[in-house]
Amino acid sequence: MDQYSLRPPQRMGIGAILALLCSLGSMFFSCSGHPGRGLILAALSIPFGLIGFVRAASPEISGGLASIFSIIVGVVGIAVALIAMFFKIILF
Image 1 (cartoon, rainbow, N blue to C red):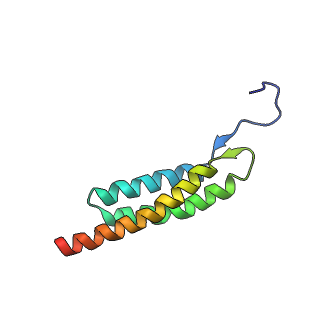
Image 2: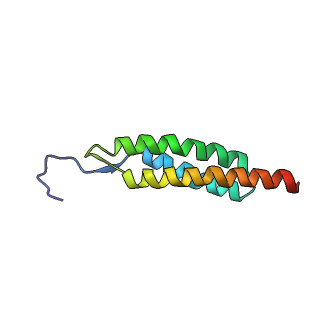
Image 3: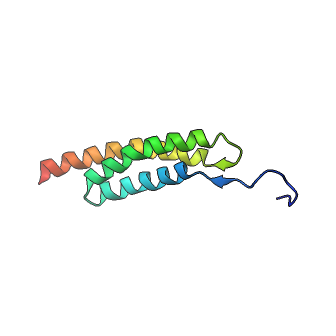
């Protein structure tokens, strides 16, 4: 980094951070026997990922790839949670 730069350093956007936490948490809860919580977190990770992706267009905020990854994991997390709910209903 140039110490005389007028541009502030990039930082990770809060939307991208929340999206990552929600998407990874959804997979954890879905695989540990709590698919309802996993479904809620997966559904939350998609809007947080979209917010993080839009905010990453600013040169001061990073996290665009993390937001895209979170949206993909959120969609997969919804599918995993629904499959876990289905098998939990059938088996128990």
